[in-house]
Image 1 (cartoon, rainbow, N blue to C red):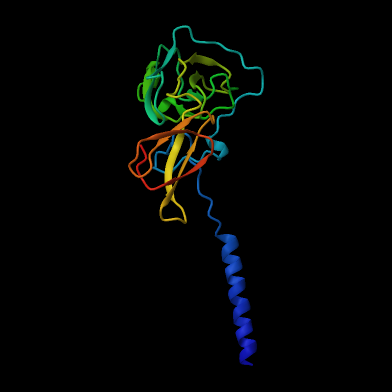
Image 2 (cartoon, rainbow, N blue to C red):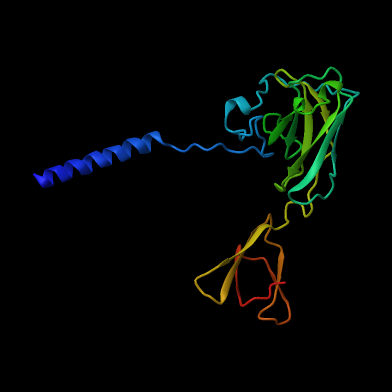
Length: 226
């Protein structure tokens, strides 16, 4: 009898775990490139259809506003993660639904954007000018901003100057150190657009050596990385 009751209790427990597991899926929002947030402080989910621009599938005419200008500063050889200022002026008949959109590379199709900012988030947008600051991360491509008018965003009002990154596509990024199973060893890892790089190091205080970046993982004995 006791065995039967124990088995029943186990079955009930497993059933409860299964039900709660099914109903408790953790679906966390995915942040946008700019890390935008709603007015209530919650993260803007990049996957949600309501947060995506709906470009028309019809031919996309270019009707640049001759009086409008869009500028990024600084824009030449900026560092990875550097903050830049995007400013615009001279936009005629601005709308609260106008957007400034980021593209990397600059020649990307309109609907292949990385992120955007609603001009209405800037107090002076209704006067045809404004500015905001964002951080740009090196995706190993040059970047450009575009000012699109409201509606189906087929009207391109202005294009910015092109933004380039320090080191371009080949610069090694995301470098970090980690331990291995050997207490006299450490692992150096990085990401780069090429294998034709060089790594400078020294063994236990000896003179620095220079070796090619041949492998994505390099093991160094002792310390003294320079």
